[in-house]
Length: 267
Image (cartoon, rainbow, N blue to C red; front, side, top):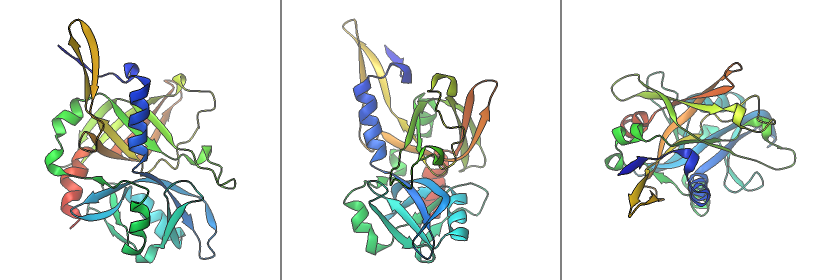
C-alpha cells in the first residue's frame, strides 16, 4: 500500500538530487545601472523555462516592474555572480497577464540564449504533462530563491535558499489563475535564519511526484527525477512572518497560472 510522501523522511541522497535538478534551472537576477554598477538591493530570483517554443525566465511581475524602473541592465547568473549574462532591459520582451496575477515571462534574446543554454536547463512547461489534482495532492513542495540578506555581493558570492515544505493553502483566483501558500517553520532553522526573504521574489516553487511503497514487508522510496516529474508549480511573490508562531508564510502564484494561464499568454 502506498504511503504519502513526507519531506521529513526523504533520503538525503534524493534530497540532494532534487536540489541539483531545481538549481539547474534557477537563477539570481541582478540589476545594473548605465555604468555597469550593481544597484544596491536590486536582487531577485527566477526560473529558466520553455513555453510554446519560446525560451525565457519565469519570475514575478513586480520584479520586472522594479528592474524596468530602476535599472538599465538585467543580468542572469548562470554559475555564480562572476559568471553572468546581461541585457538592456529595453530590449527584453516581457509577457504578463492582463490581471493582477504576479507572474511574468521574460523572453531571452537570441544573442545570449546560447550562452545560457550551455550551462542551464530550460524547464519545459508542458500542459499535457501537468495534473493539477496530483500537484495539489502531493505534500512535498520546495521553494527556492536568493534572499538579499544572506548574500555577499561585494565578495562576488551568491547563496541560494532552498526549503522543503508542504502546501498550506490553495486558492482559486479565476478559472485559470490561482495562488498557493507555503509555511517555513523558522524555529526549526538555524539562529542566523534571515529576518527577511527579500530577493526570493520570482523564485520557483517546485513539486515532485514521489511515494513510498511496501514491497515484501520493506518500505521503498520512489521518485522520478526528470523534468516531467519535477514540476515548476509556482512563483514566489510575497513573504509574511508570524513572530508568535515562528512561521514565515511564502505566497506564490500557483500551478494553474503557469500551465493554463501563461501558456495562453506566451504566444
